[in-house]
Image (cartoon, rainbow, N blue to C red; front, side, top):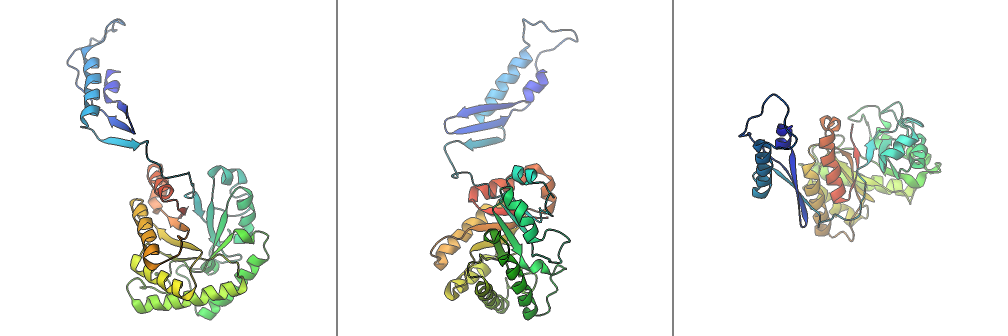
Length: 321
């Protein structure tokens, strides 16, 4: 018991913060017989362990977790509770589970798309929103079967997009739909755009064409993008300047964060600075519509770091994979 006490964490509440310290285990200077210990006495080893733990906290010789109770990131947002293909069909998962998880957003394929056998947008929209979900993001590109997507021509894809928009317009839940016309274009149809100015310009021109096409079919449509595979400030800055000049800004800014949680605060902060630099009149909502590496999703401790980062930056996000 004395060894457990010696290794226990010592907690010290000080003013504006909480310091949690794991105290090093002390070696008892006394001896203990194999028999019972008198209830009226305490060994010198126990006393020295408690003293050493207190000294460790005071001296700061151990690793400290410092919580500043005087600092706040604002009202709770909860936007990190989202999923990529997390809903397969009505009842899968159940509404109780969706509501219990507090899902805010979900990414899914276009109605009748070939990317997966289930998760058709207009079929999962009703159970999702009925269980408290807010927005369904439709990956319009997931009308295709493969990834990378097997698009042959832009005209072909435009035909698919027209069908998708027409389907959404017949849905009673259309106001909960957000259209995502590109998914990781820097690795698909415009590979290399982050390093090649001509390729980036080609993507921007097609984005404008697609934006105008969708708005022509549905003026009230909410469009998200550009949905790069990561945060690429140079390419994103060019994209924002182009969209600002050509009146084709997305309604929601999206990109993916699939490496480590520590980049989220930095990247979102850099993006907000970028908005100001290029002259956007207001901040756009941000959705990191695919976040976290695959191996991290089975580690609650690592997922907590992601949840904390998204909450601190007040961004929405959808767990990938």
